[in-house]
Amino acid sequence: MYDGLWTVEFISTIQRYGNGVLVLNQNRLFGGDAGYYYSGKYDINDKKIEGDIHITRYDRNSVSVLGSISDFVLKMSGNIIDENRFEAIGEIDNNPKACIQIIGTKKEDL
Image (cartoon, rainbow, N blue to C red; front, side):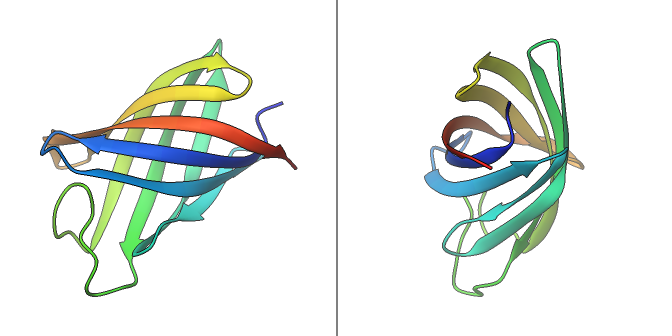
């Protein structure tokens, strides 16, 4: 039901905004934006989504919504609004004060 292509919007605690795409497929996720790519795992249970997302900068000139970070793991936790939308908070493993709001909108089924 949730496997598919999603667009994501990001809003950080330092008032930076961004967007990208995610593919959710059988508890694996892949995606990216103009300067970073994402890979990781997620679980959906009882309208809750949780996951660990490894985020890697591939464009040395890009700056993430969390600042100039090259490689980090984002712990995501949130709620499934319906089968086409979720909202979550992502925190960096070793810096919980640096967090982002994530809004996902499903665009295509797999």
